Image 1 (spheres, rainbow, N blue to C red):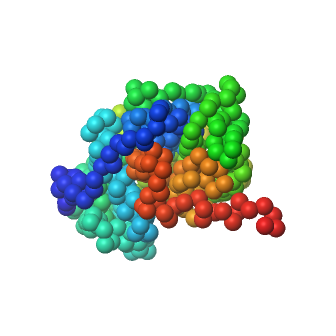
Image 2: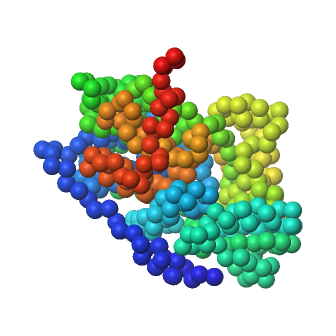
Image 3: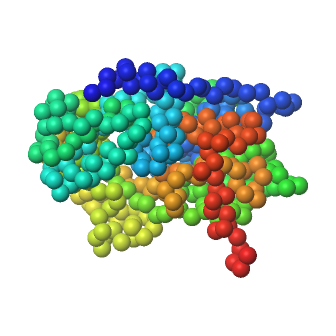
Length: 407
């Protein structure tokens, strides 16, 4: 296995940090960030640290949407090489932020295994996503799995891989840390505060209308997760997202059992937070049952607390079958979240066509990408440039969808 210190050294070797830039104005630019999830909070942190006059708006509060309900696994697993490199750069940025801000990230790596030959192909496909990058996975046998995760009861091991560079975090805590540092640099935080309009004068952004009044702005970043399409519609741009519900069981704290992200047979994935809570799931989305029809069709809550408890205890039971020392861990809560999923699964980042002064940032992998998107969006807003690294992710690729019927 690659030692963790070597991994950090390799990550740090090939990347430079973006420097703060002067923008040559008589006053700092007034930049609004809509969305106080982890992506919006990172953008606010980077902008405020660079000297911008930042206002963060959220109609509910910090980390109240997809961020709160995220598994919060930091990783580079994706088949697209360009997108994978973007994620690797974000892992590097996290190491820098973790050192400077004390984010409490658990850099324990990621273990994926299959019980039988019929499912070993899924592990091989997973490994192939990191093939050819500087940090390929390591293949493990059953004895090596036992040595890596001694409290695990994996059952038969037909195939197993370990990725040493992965980590996980407390998404709510890290979001709050970003917002606190933004505020220490002068950012204003407004929530609950819902935007009702985006105003333009002479072809440029003038500010936003909110339920608390008008706020003058020079630039606006829409990073509002699943609420992003509604906000972009206010400035005439249509962006569709796929409906993507997900559930996670959260136990009450137990003594430390593991630092690793585990991805096992039967879609059972779990981790242990730094505070001792076991967090995991056994399905990418709520099971296809009649009682879940509404949730699978649109954003709505579980019909009752009993169903939440049923799902939560079922998931914790499956986890404890693989992690026996977690048996008896009491369910604290079951989260139901709705992931902001662009139609082509790639991030949407950049200036909104036809809406001068408005940027959009929306992505499924918000936890993984938050640091690098914070840096890159800050550079583009303050320098007025378009970074080549973001060229593939521009909202222009959806411009046809924004055209009126018959255009």
